[in-house]
Structures are given as C-alpha cells and as structure tokens.
Amino acid sequence: SGAMMLDYMGWKKASALIRDGIKYTIKEGTVTYDLARQIEGAKKIKCSEFANKIIEKM
Image (tube, rainbow, N blue to C red):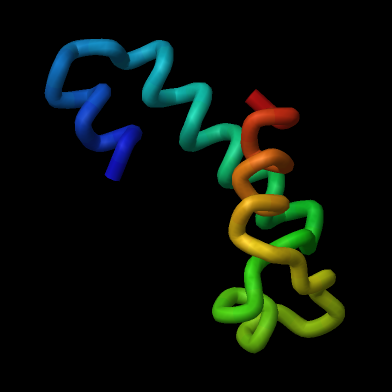
C-alpha cells in the first residue's frame, strides 16, 4: 500500500525501490509465516524482520 501511495503522489522511483525490495526478499525465500505456508523451503521470519530485509534490498 505504501508503494501505491507513492505512485499516486508521483514518486515513481521511491515506489520502485519498495517493490524491488519486496520482490528480492520474497525471491530469496525469507518471508513471513503467511507466505511461508505457500512457498516450499521458505525461511519463516517475524514481520519486523521481513520489513528490515526489504529495507536492506532497497
């Protein structure tokens, strides 16, 4: 939702950074419990840890 808000505001570069951070974190297989149930071999982490991983990838 944050990326969508930034798109609406015209901040395309910031929005792309968030989307890329999410994409690469999920691709890495490090996800929250709800996603880990759907991805075989995924590593489950807390929401706060997931957010930190996304920030690292930005």
